[in-house]
Image (cartoon, one colour):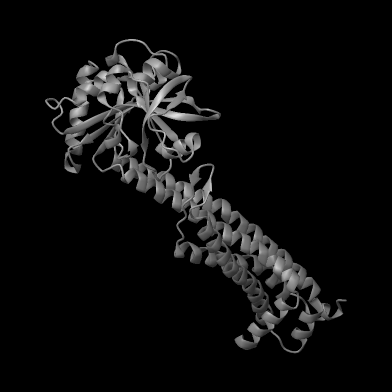
Length: 415
């Protein structure tokens, strides 16, 4: 049998049962479109977070408490952090840290922010005046937290853009009062809108780090002993990152009075290291999303095999007639394989269109305040199509072999 005749016969057989073929295609369509959509969302999240971290600058170093300090805090045997505001002041000394441009300590807190009847639970950060430069943030209106605010533990706040919209609508809140943790704060500034995931400053509030410690968290003690959750350290430039890291290690070793051989109770990470870790994590996440969506393809393939087995049973007499007039086992085998492949190929093409369309319209959608970003990659679509065809071949083999193995005489007797 010629390949042209084989193709036309297979198309006619598929078209003879349009509803059944359509339902079979649906499983493949859902599988392929799910793979494309989920991979697009996963890649979009990866690119978004990577761009956000890259935007902080290649000369940023982050200093955080070590495992011992965190364990002590968890079991109640120590402070929340083994890093203090005094450590940050020591790092900012140009004599001991000539390659350190600035140091921006921070301390996180959670509280309820209110304005009139509007109320929202927010994540806040106690900061110093250097925080905005270190985190590459900008003021849209008003001013930044000042050194005087930090010194006086002033009740002032800088609001994120989306938090401002929630509490004040379209009004400019600078100069007005907002309640944070049941204390009245004067809004002195509003941040420019940021894009990204993770810690999103759009929905956060910034207050002086001393205010966060004494007036929100109820802390005591001298200002130098204020615990900080992390310190953002900017090196002079990208080439000074390693020397700045060494200077941080030396200074903290002195301030912590660590003896030779003692383990450092703090961690220093650069943006490059953060990006490498993130890329590995995101790659695993994307693969996981693709694998979950790929299960739909397997389910669709099982559906194809089921339908093809039913088709073999229904067409047993037809197979017997064709065998009796000269059709070979190979012809029967190829026809049923081709029918299965045509269904999965058609489902794959429709699935690509559906997945591409879904990912396209999902780009920029806002869910629970977070903006979804999608990145559609051609090779993912082609891979999904190839897998769908392979699924058709794989799950079509058994029905095709069964059809080709039918005894012509027994097949002709089938009613």
